Length: 120
Image 1: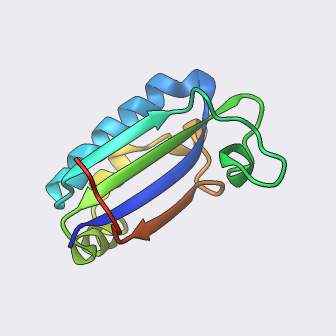
Image 2: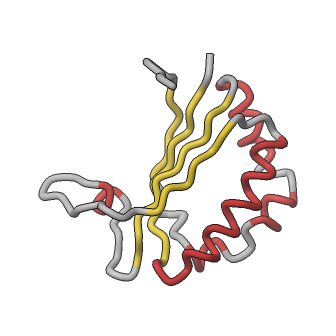
């Protein structure tokens, strides 16, 4: 069964091009390790909430934009195997050498999900 990894990240608004470059280089590795598809969505209509919201979840700062991303995997085992390579494969570091200047890894929210219903 397919498996979905989802991510929310606060990205420096003026670093959109750099984020896109990191995402493109990372996608090449995700794909090599078995990912089926990926989407990186730049926030346009992402309101602040009173109790909770995407901006609140990542503690978005005034100079940041929330990015909502997901990766589709054939199964959880393939996703887990890819994650295990992140400590070993030096190409991950090469794909995102300045990631900390572009987005906050500490405030990024992520998780893995089993699809309940999928259309399209």
